[in-house]
Length: 194
Image (cartoon, rainbow, N blue to C red; front, side):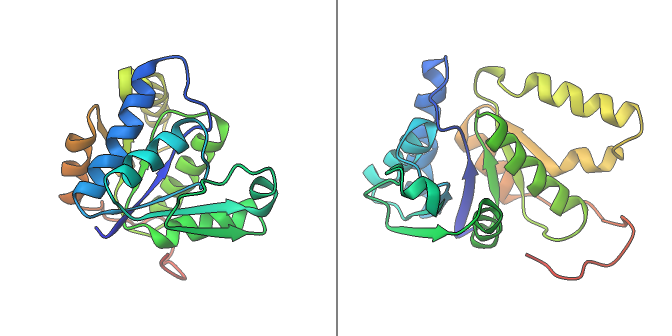
């Protein structure tokens, strides 16, 4: 994995551990010579993540839509800042640049990015690992809900394996390195791979 795309909040949240783990993940990526691709922000967990990677001399690529850059929310020290016209362009660019994906705690935007990435994997548009850094059990309720959707036959059980879960950055990266995608027989052959 040359680069990992990370989705996370523009807030630091209520638990100081969220901030600590975001910084630690950024540092670990840099130490392992894995570039960081993220939403480009200087605030919240996004800023902590980027600072961790930058402090460890890592590559940090931000991808930010123009309307957020205009509000001066872009991280000034990123190695590279890619400005897109729309949120859709941002997501596609972040997906194409990463060899894997990690979601940290966050809100609607983080969850939307995560679910679109998982959906693309389910449809066979990419075969990259997707991980949840489950700091303090943040994603426990979400994982229970996903298990319920499987029980109620809206998601096939084999697609649950598309989401790797770790409580520590090193554990999660280890799982991502050994990830083997499930066989996809959704409905069609994919038109393109991202």
